Amino acid sequence: MITRRLARPLSQSSSSAWVCPACIGSPFAPRQAAASILPQTRRQQPQQRRSIHHVPPLTYDATFQQDGIPNFISKYGYKIAWTEYQALMVQKLNELTAGEPYEHSLTKDLAIQFARDPMSASLFNHASMAHNNHYFFSTLSTHPSKLDNHPSLKQSLISTFGSIETLQMTMLDTASAMFGPGFVWLIWARDLDIVGTRRGGWRILTTYLAGTPYVEAGYRQQGIDTNTNNASSQSAYRGPISNNVGYMGQYTKANMDKAKLPPGGTNAQPVLCVNTWEHVWLRDYGISGKRAFLSDWWDTVDWGAVEQIAPKESKGPAQFIRY
Amino acid sequence: MVQKLNDLTAGTPEENSTAHALSLTYSRQPNMSSLFNHASMAHNNHFFFEALSPSPPPISNSLTTQLNQDFGSLETLKQTMLSTANAMFGPGFVWLVKAKPSSNATVQSQEQRFRVLCTYLAGSPYAGAHWRQQGTDMNTVANQTAGAFGAFSVGGQRDAALAPGGTGVSPVLCVNTWEHVWLRDWGIFRKRNFVERWWECVDWGVVEARVPKTQGLRGRPFI
Image 1 (cartoon, rainbow over the protein chains, first blue to last red):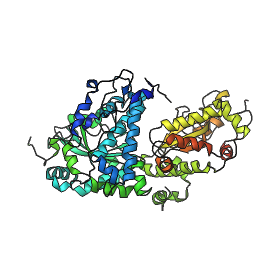
Image 2: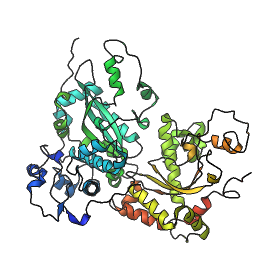
Image 3: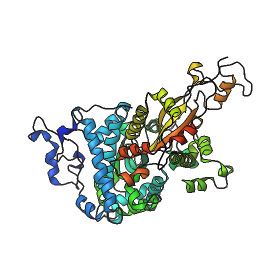
Image 4: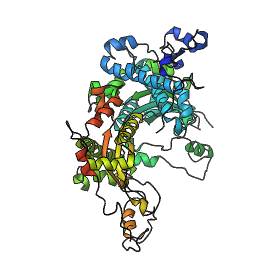
């Protein structure tokens, strides 16, 4: 077990109104957040040091604190899952990054940088968890927009999953089957389809605990989660094969190379996730209520927020290119 | 846990097996991961609650002596277990086990020692559940024995029933750090307080009863 000596005593840090830069420029962050990305422009006492990381403001935080997330999480549950838990993550993150060259890095960058460094496991966990938890809450709102209001996104999802019902059932069943806390992600994976229908495709991904969905973080040593697959879906997942043959299809060289990459292709953009950690649903749904929690979550997703995050090429129907 | 376990084993030959036996059988079968998880979790959770008492008697001198031998002091053991539990990111268990080093070590070091070990989620501490070290070669004749030591000795063959080179691990105590155990009573910030309070509720009588008895001179008799 590795204990870390702090670069400076905690008593010298004080909170500031720093905002996670992931919120800058996003539609659901207050405008004045932009100023605080540059702490050098503020006057600082030499003795006092500001804490760099702070709980990022959510657009609907004030309402959520008062009334909870409607039809989903009570204000008590919200307090545990966001206000307190995120504060805990941020506090640990400040402790672990104080005085280091990466103390200003975004949580996403920290997660990618330290994912493969076992000596920095604690830093990775807290950064990744802070990032994932923020992602989860940023797609929830007081008046969520239904998917029907976003036809191009809806059409794109149907192209991959066959129907929205299938997407819903797949995500919820996957989350339900996972043993232990984690996240289930809907991601847009670029450069997957060599035949070039859409230069990418939707995928569902699971991560346990504080795992990160970003492919750049490193190779997923286990391609599938056997908790959420059965014998036939497991056999469909191929291990590495050595020869290649043909011009198109799964046995071409290009596609074989892709098969060696982690699932998700060369570039993965997460657009939606559900947080299945117990502290999120235990208070409002009870120990046997995980499935009900997941159903309610699906009805509460703000597809407007999802559409804003989704990359441009992911919205719209498939276009077939002749070779 | 029990409900899921019943669902998963109903109608199979295993429906009457103990949770512990199920967890050992299926720990290495990815297709049966759900069954393993629920069986192992049921067993671990039970193990945790069995050693709790509302007003535990003080720890006995013999157990204190044994623990001091391997940890220096009870305080060190306590801080090790608590700090491990606190540092783990995500739910799991921290175990106090009595373990034997691998069978190809020298005789003197065959004696069992107390150790602290942690498992995440529904992980199992039992050596029978997984393969630790690569020691003895399993590809030998099964039923004959030869010699006092080595792969073909009685001891070697017994160890071969475990994973190759696997150690004998006997858990005697664990703390369950899943959130549902402490979230309600302690809140999200006070996991450390929960674990500290747990230490004061441990029934050391139960723990001592679980410690496996060693024969003779703390290990195998030397021939």
